[in-house]
Image 1 (cartoon, rainbow, N blue to C red):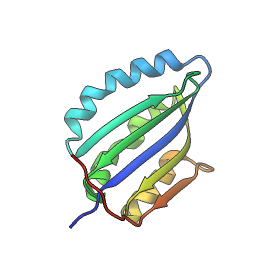
Image 2: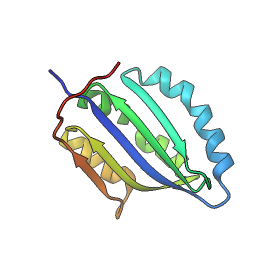
Image 3: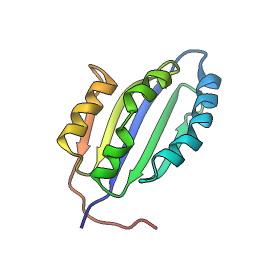
Image 4: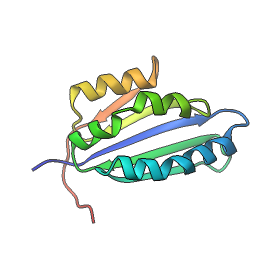
Length: 124
């Protein structure tokens, strides 16, 4: 049985760019929903001061995460006009090539942590 994978990215919103980021993100949701059907959930939260944003994505398995990342370099280029990555966390066992790609997308100095041992649970 395949195990779920959770992707969490923490990002700093660039000074004065919060509203532009919100608009960009809102416009991107329909495309992501349509083009990435194996992404089970995508949830994004902004902190109270509009200085950080956290993106959480849920996948049924590592393959679904791989599909989400197809084209991510291009999408990230536009998104990084408004935000800067602080960290990436993967819960579950990603494919090794996925880890390499995430590190490339995030850039040098951005930690990518992995908690790979799935203990169980449920998704409704």
